[in-house]
Image (cartoon, rainbow, N blue to C red; front, side, top):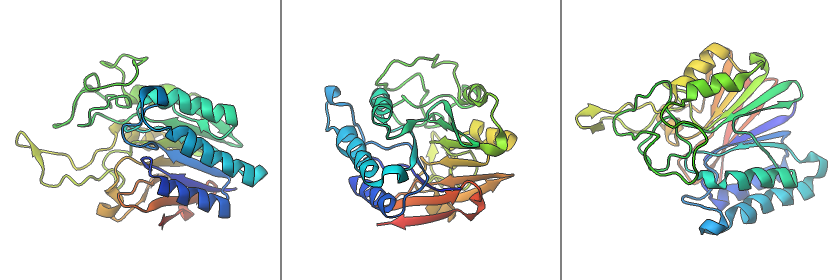
Length: 285
């Protein structure tokens, strides 16, 4: 099976994109996964102000790679993250579709050979103001210090009920008739209570209530435990690998990878779908 690359949480840093493009040029993978938080903070499409990052960096960069690599150009699967305003979603989707650069994967199942590739962008409630990619997790409970998904700011009107929609129900609807052992999931949120969702919140409190140091999704954790996909990919919690010393974890038969990173380095996870246990991570600079 072909080599796969996974990156996440580049947050519009052009140096990290340059490092990614250079590595792909030198050693093209068969598949490339981008796990969200891809755009600069506060970025909006041109008619909403801001630089045209999507066309100048993403489209231009991947277009150059496609011209240079020809039939060695990888199959690219991409989702957005909670820091990517959803007003950009249609621009991203159409750019990939029009130029054949990537598959916009959020809330979709895409067949790749004998595998099914799924994508899902939503995270549980957070303290952050932008709520485009936040939903309740398994219930309407919100952790201390966090705000409800129906509050805060949105860049587009949601096409679901913000009061009652949750991640648990979304995943149940997304699965369909997939095969667990041949399914690959591209998430932005990590699963709850793992080495991939550990945040630097030790000793911190809100209104005398200790904060949970694990910020992942309970719904995603339970889903992985019960469904047992082959591979799941995650980002969002940048400091987790530093705190825990781990960027991957196995849950039953599922291999889970975290590609977010809190430094200037690009965290590049490399794996083979036929042997995910042999995955490696390289920090490029």
